[in-house]
Amino acid sequence: MTSRSLRQDELWKSVVEVISREFDVPADNLEPETLLLHIEGADSIKQLRAVTQLEHMYGVTLMTAAVPPAQSLSDLVTQIGGLREASGGQ
Image (cartoon, rainbow, N blue to C red; front, side, top):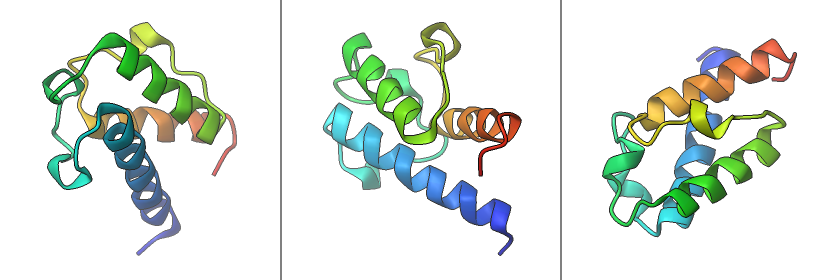
């Protein structure tokens, strides 16, 4: 396993943990193709809290408009990873 895939794994676990906690759903119910919009109990406040937590955890800025409710969790992980790489983060 490369260090990049390890970082992606760690990022995935963090995203799932935050989404699971904020949306009050079991982490086992979340898959890479899960859309934020389709998570039970999803609303804009929960989405905003989750995005804010991820921003603080990873030192990135995710514009709310750049995280549409129809975005998949995999897309969110990719977006955070790309922003971290662009800023020189690991």
